[in-house]
Picture 1 (cartoon, helix red, strand yellow):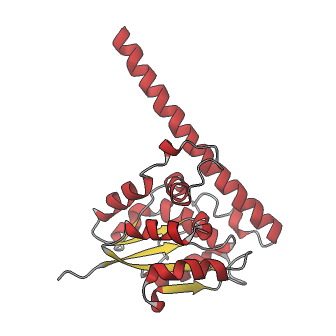
Picture 2 (picture 1 turned 90 degrees about the vertical axis):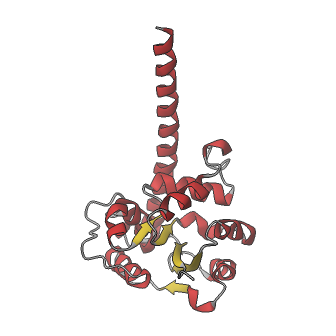
Picture 3 (picture 1 turned 180 degrees about the vertical axis):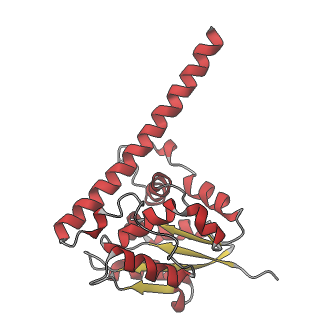
Length: 222
């Protein structure tokens, strides 16, 4: 019987761990070479998947049809790499037990690990809700980030999942520089702006699809 691949879900609290989502998306191609497939290849993709799973589309002013099926599509695409999967999105920290179960259901072919990075908010409730998804206690991981810079958190996360980060630098990763703020208020603002940017990316993609569709129709009329 073939050994199951692992699936690592990062649902960290707002804080230094925020950089993980952007870093995974930015380095998704390089990660495959290291034996790990990022489920999302852009932060817009991870945002849409988290919005779908947490049923929060109305809160973000997004149509349900714009996010419906996003998570399962991303998982199927990532599985083609035949590697361990990894995904990160802070919104998942608020997922209910039912939403957690639905998300994990798409990962039935994998041994699911959950990583919670500590941050500005208390992580106890999040750990409790996500523990059931792991099936075994040793697959629930809490990564302490107190006093760590984002680069150190990224390195620690990579070591936990099983990939090195020496060649996966944060210099060019969007939002990574902003995450180096240390004041709680500044970190909360970074979190808010990152989520806002992801929401805008989703809307821009939708507008671009409509523009291309209209262009095709006009071409047919001409």
